[in-house]
View 1 (cartoon, helix red, strand yellow):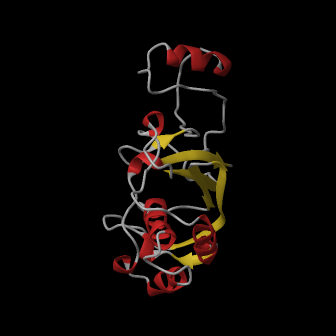
View 2 (tube, rainbow, N blue to C red):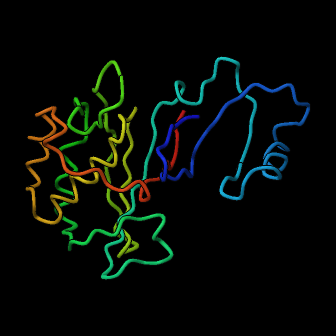
View 3 (cartoon, rainbow, N blue to C red):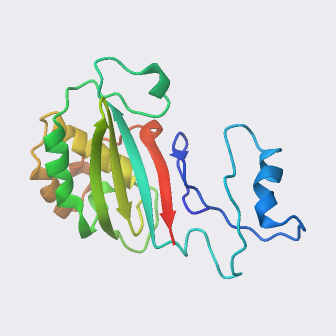
Length: 199
C-alpha cells in the first residue's frame, strides 16, 4: 500500500499493488473486488503496471487532508471524519504558523516514537488551509514523505497556535529544536485522510 495509515485514519486515494495470475482484465477488477470487499472499502480503478512498480516506494509525493470542525457544536455527520476542538481558533494564525513548515527540514519534533527511519528530513511542498466550507476547515499538506504521526502532530501544534497557546513564530523554534516534547499534542486520527498519491 502507498500509505500505512494508523487505526482511525481514512483514505480517499490509497494505492495498492499486487501480482496476480487472474485472467480478469484490469478494467473489470474493481467490480469483481468490490463484490467481496467489506462496505467500508471500495476499489475505484485498476491498471496494469511494470513489475518494478511499488505503490509506496515509487510515489513522488503524497497529499493528506486533515479536517477541523470549528462549529459551535460538533456536526454529527462529520463526527467520524473531523476533529472538533473545544477552543475558538484563529484562521489567520493557522496560516501564518504553517508557513514555517514548508520546505526541506528535519521534522524530528513532529515524529512520534516507535518509528525506525534513517532520516527525519522531509520536504513539505505545500501546506494550505481551505476555509471555503466553514465551519469545516481543511488542511491539505503535500510532502515527499511523512514520518510516523507527523501530520497529526503538525495539526495538534497548529491548533495550539490558533487557540493562542503558542505564537506562529514558535513553530520555527519547535521545528529547529528537533524534540518531540516541544511540539503540540497529536491530533485525533479521525480527522486525517490520505487524499492523493502522486507518481
